[in-house]
Image (cartoon, rainbow, N blue to C red):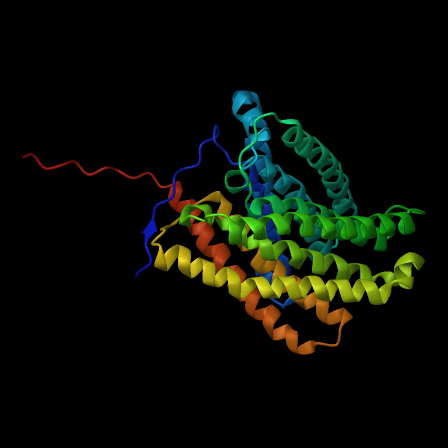
Length: 354
């Protein structure tokens, strides 16, 4: 029983995974976690690095659409890869949140909010409609994975940014409608999590699970409810700006704690499954863009726990938040090193003559 490490495969434009925007999600949330815990220099560096990541991924995606339209179209129709497009929504929204929280660029963040909200509508009703009417569909075992929960993360990230934009008063006269919109997104996304998670739990416990089936996005099982916790906490913090939310503040706080409890329940289970995957079954550690989808939940749990302490009297949770900030940062660094490793050109050694 030992850990195996391998070099990851070099990314190619033709096969660029739609879920690559999870790198923006992961970098953004680690930056915000660092900011909340007083690591200001690191948080600021990650803002500008994330801007570079986002620009590069947008350029690469546009280039892929132009050069390899058939490969891009095939991803849209794929049950396993198609849901990766939700990371474009979440990545855009998380970067907007990052700009708002760390730099105070509320108006620039509002531009990213418009982009994220538009992408959310297009990807949610476009991608899900394509997969719904598709005549040939995979089995539950082949088509369902934790990546489907990025649809929840996408909506909740838009809900959080909507709350921040509304609270800043960017759009005069629309404060209450925007907060109501954020409330509806939060509740609807919470229901979506319960629907999808029921199927994932069924797939895990009643359908054969091979080691290779346990892909990195299974950590989104936890991350999707962690961001739901954060969205609820943000609504509770700004409840005074909305009579509707003010009337239901105990419900909002209670449901936020409910989501956090689910996220916390998942962590030991995911660690156990990771031990089974890497140690007991010998699956190697090798860079994969999907690992960014495992970094994001760690950072999100840190931020969600931190914000939860603002709406419930649980200051002892701050140490837990700080611990997960450090864990998320370590995971982010390891994943970045894995990415850089794939870009290194390796010279094959010549075989000695026989």
